[in-house]
Amino acid sequence: MQRIFLIGFMGSGKSTLGRQLAEKLNYTFLETDQLVEQNVGLKITEIFEKFGEDYFRKKEHDILIQLQLVHNCIIATGGGMPCYFNNMELLNELGTTIWLEVDELTLVDRLKNETSERPLLQQSQNLHQRIHELLDQRKKFYDGSKYVINNPTVEKILEVL
Ligand code: S3P
Image (cartoon, rainbow, N blue to C red; front, top):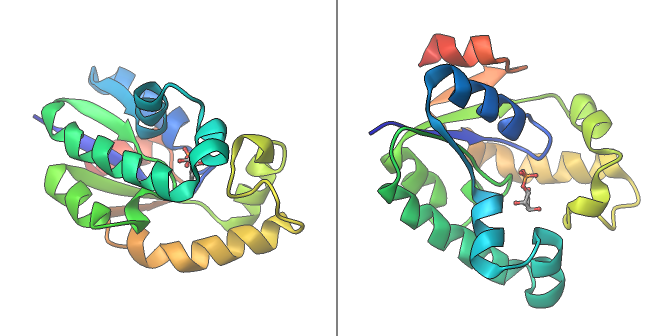
């Protein structure tokens, strides 16, 4: 009944590496963003626009609680999930948490053409500054993960499992 949670900032590779990892381990791959979208019936950007961030965070929390029902899964979590409610504690109770730590400049490079899909980055005049601020607030939560992998690759993740 293994559950492996990939934790980390937007653009840290949770979905890409999660898919590859699931294939190698013969696990199911899930993304909390996608589960929230399915639950609400709207895209993340539309949920933020129509109902606001608090509503999204509540839905994200509800989805996390339901994940106790799934087994043998790799789960890519939304970048903000560990930072709200008691989510980080819950994540550690439900499975193995792995923080995919990627440096700020790499994140800026990966995210610079994708800000329209990410409500928290949409209005930032200075993307690097915005990422820096968010990371500064979030690192203490991400740091509660069981494992931290810097510049993650599938091989590095497999080594700790
Ligand atoms: C968010 C990250 C996004 C998504 C939403 C909010 C965040 O997920 O949950 O836009 O607060 O960092 P990804 O990390 O998969 O991009």
